[in-house]
Image (cartoon, rainbow, N blue to C red; front, side, top):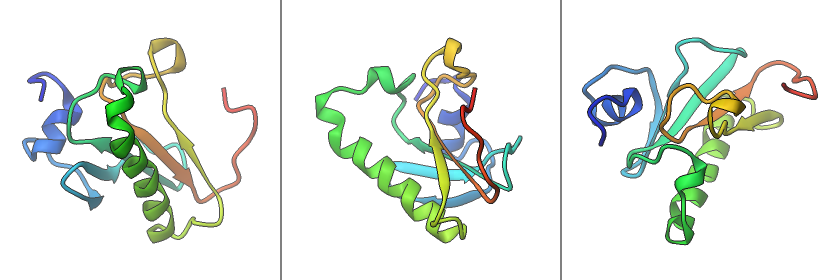
Length: 114
């Protein structure tokens, strides 16, 4: 855990969040500035700055995060159509440097997204 990381504080329970689902390795909670009717963030409890820090030994965790996204989408009623986003680095729009997935849905998504 990094002391100054917002998502590490949420993962440890030191900062409140509207939790949707969780396991011992990840946490899903509602985004405080939603960009769609459903906007849930999924974070690993372990700190990784971005997808770029994952290595071969993290395959299991990466799979769990994707399955968590599927589970969250289903529980939020958007299982038939949702977008999953992982911004990696400032140029991609990452503003909190703790790996996280955005699960977005509840409306038609446009393409291209950026």
